[in-house]
Image (tube, rainbow, N blue to C red; front, side, top):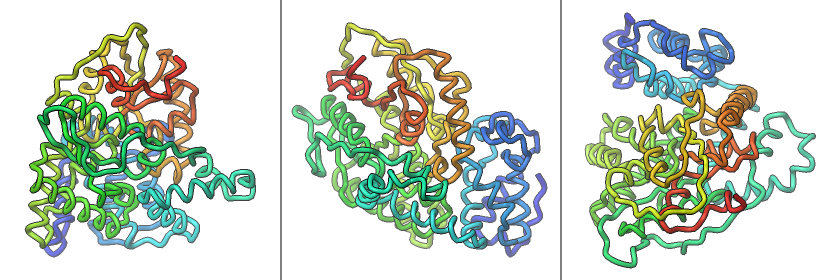
Length: 432
């Protein structure tokens, strides 16, 4: 694709990056064939190629975003399926992130939209505020018919209860025997509140296999929720806090990895180095690059570094593996979790059209409920085709979204691996 940025524009590293990305696009349209929103709407502007043209025009002409641009970029899930499909290596992720920041800075959304997005940007990254919002939602739920559609939809996703973690609240979890490795664990913001059993299972399996786990108290949210809302300043505040916290432990304890159990967070962590590539603080640039290099999905780390001690279970199950978009497209991790699951002796099946998003995508199912509902309907229909006993995935957002559309139990991959290596059975499948 030909571009016409001026020399002055190209002095901005973000524009230089956008220029390089745009020039790789050859207009082939392969991306549209695997874009979930294009499959539903059939509008060129709701596919990656159309969005790329909108972004190019906006950035090249240094125009403020308008309602049309915001509408079609907002409809993008950031599932990155287009990046897996693209034969030219177009890094759509970096391009759409830049576009979202530009939209947030130059476009004034309607008041209600601004209010909702601001509310989500403050509540979801904070475990304390999210828990408070959950308790409040219980009070308002009987009166949900009084609220606007978007608020009613959000109330639907709020948890009914907040289970407690079985682990002690401390920073260092050491193995009983010899320590062979040491990692830092990102416990997540929403995840630690609604599904603490995921982190419990992660600590259990790692400790049992000789890995010391460090959970820095200073780290809450990875920053990706605000990052994808285009709230650059808030996102960078979280990024910098996390980078400094993890780097401190890296220097003090020689961390072997920073493990993530929420694939959406993992995609962002692995991008810290790129995000701060031109930051004026040279030391921060170095730290960000090191943190990104240490970031690993928990299944990625277990598959490469730990020989798991599997325990044979008498009953065998048919497990449908849902490959989260941020895992298979964002991090290019697809086979590793399934390979680990297959070693449990269960039948592991892929879901038809598994490359298509379930509609969760961070805050997407809250902000774009109609599109998300259609994607959920299609995902559940495809899951039903393989008739599994339960579903496994590596992302809390997908777990929440899919469970709202089916009665088939869904559990995190690490919960299954923990169970089949001597840990506790996941609560969600206790009745099977």
